[in-house]
Length: 198
Image 1 (spheres, rainbow, N blue to C red):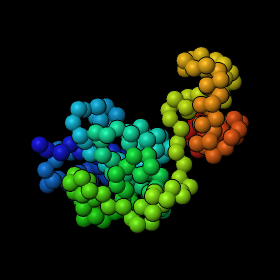
Image 2: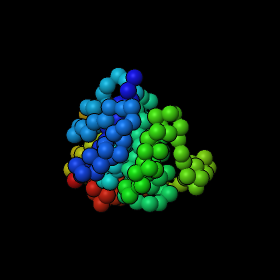
Image 3: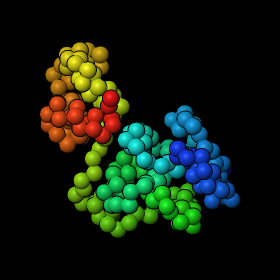
Image 4: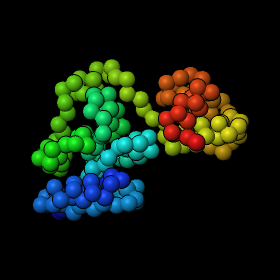
C-alpha cells in the first residue's frame, strides 16, 4: 500500500519543492489547502507541516494527538526549545526550513519505516522534563479567553461550555498556567500579544 503524505506550507514553491524531492518515494503526495479535512481519512498518514505561526502550533497540537497521523515539523527557528516544543505537541520528527534535500528525504524515510531521529540535546530535555517549552491552550480554551477579554462572565462561559462555575474557574486556571501566569488579566494580555486571540 502506498503511503499517504501531505505537504503543508503557505508558500506554493516550498510545497512543490518538497513534493519534487520526495517524488520517487512509494507514496501519494498531496498539497491540501485544508489540512484538517485531509487528515480525516481512515488510514495512517504522514504530514510534513511548516509551523510558522501560533495558529500552526495550535493545529500541530490538535493533529499531534491523533495516533493515525505522523507529523514531520518544519521550523524556521533553529533552537532546541522550539524542537522540544514540537515533539511535546506531537511531532515525530523536526527539520529546519533550510534543510538539505537529502536530510529531508532521510527524515521522511525514517518516519515511514517507523523510526525517529532526535538530536541528543532534545532527547535529553524530553526525558528529563526540564524544558521551557510552553504548551499552547486549545482552541476551546482560547475561545474562553476571548470571551473573558470581551467582558463575558465566568458564569456565562461555564454555562455555554456545560461546566459548573467552580469547574470553569479551575479550567481557566489551567489555561492561565499554560500561558505562564496565574492571573486572568495577565493571561489575556499574553494571549493578545502572542496573536492567539483578538
